[in-house]
Image 1 (cartoon, protein in one colour):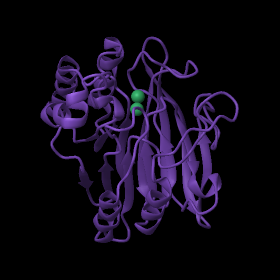
Image 2 (tube, rainbow, N blue to C red):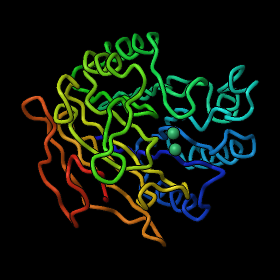
Image 3 (cartoon, helix red, strand yellow):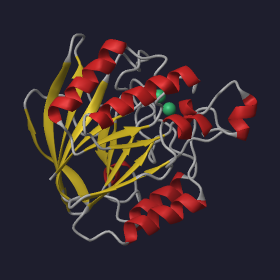
Image 4 (spheres, rainbow, N blue to C red):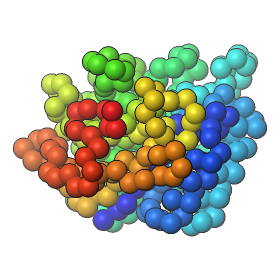
Length: 290
Ligand SMILES: [Fe+2]
Ligand SMILES: [Fe+2]
């Protein structure tokens, strides 16, 4: 079994320092096998913000934790046009990682991060042909029994983000991205960006989306919340490629508390909620914690 903490949208520069410290304490105590950070590490890609992000990541590394991070749209300078178009991910590479296609593999899982942040789009993201080929290629050699996990900042799928039925935009080129993920046999798609937690079987969202379990993380530490959903991150236990459990760890104003544990099993070409233990926190297909 592999235990993964999935954090997103940390946004140094618009962060709550107390909550940042609380995530560190939580991670050091629970000791996940992997910490995934799915983008937007900073608020405006400023050097001071990247320095804070770098300090945070280094403290986690020092504690012996393994990290897999990718950039988000906020990690590309917005107003500095020369840097935005000339060297958009320069600071990310300098302070976070040179690796824009991070990979983690152990006996149970194979995890690939893909950068969807672009200079040309302010908020939206894209996946290009080269990245699609990489998704297929990297997962091709992974042994059958391992759970394949794809991490992007922008979700591959349109999903509810506002109150009622407002749907988000999916990442640019998402039809091709979804095909690549389907062909690569991706079991779980992790993303962030909307500061909203959500989990659903792709096959229940629309036709031809494939069979992955789509999991969105809220913002772990930002003060900018959507619909007042509190800061949170996801705690995944990947037991087998057809059986994983998910808990939302949410900020309650003074500390992080564990939400209900939802067990997903893969049956008949879709992920289903098998069991929910503890206080009921969300229903599949609904924003978590809504
Ligand atoms: Fe964000
Ligand atoms: Fe974002």
